[in-house]
Length: 366
Picture: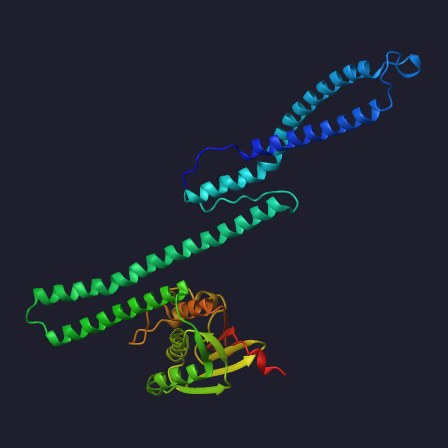
């Protein structure tokens, strides 16, 4: 923003200090003048005939007062300039860090030394903001790079299939069309997942009353054929868990969790337990599944977009696009909730979602 030039904060503070010192000095000299001269007689002999009279004392004191005021003004200007410079030095460091961050250098920090005061609080808040901004930018860059790679893969496969068909007209067109359909479906799924992730991150969605227990039942019914195909037992338990949010996004969240629990399970005879409850002003959803043991270091990374651990990579039609738990995390965050992932004893994963409970009407309390 272009602004017209004006006085610097240091100069304004200097003039304020100097003006305050000058006014204070003038008031003190005026008080001394009044209280001193009121006891000096206004005659030619002065006090007891030996001291100066009021006229002579006024001339002497007036000159001294004028000199004192000039010295006070100079002292106020010089001292105010020095004090203002020292007071504003932390602000200059913060401004320099802000300019560097504007230029794209997000790694610079203020790190203002000294004890806590207003400037240190501002510097610490600015450093915290830079930490979060740098982390967010790095995450977005990784996401963009991974998304570009994921989108390029089906396009490259499609191009290869078309090249093969052009060079070999006798090639089985039915097989080619089926492979193109599979690749295209995967690209569409990836695009829809990216759009959903963007939508949940932006928080631009309508909110309403949602019961997580009903959402869990709907998601389970949708995925029951997949579970039966893999011989996985789905067990839905719990009570009503009311919250406020987007029913579509919360349904996608629960669907992703249940599908993830089905796909990343033991080859046969596995179980998936879905439980909902209200607890301590929070609506809780817990999805627990059997499966191969997960390294503790791998679990925190599962919510990263496009992250696939070696033990969790699938090659069938339900392989997904690497955004399942990333979407879950984004939806939970958009609803001001908390997501907890931990390895299950004996193998598998336990995912717990805590969302704010729907506020109860005040009229319910008697």
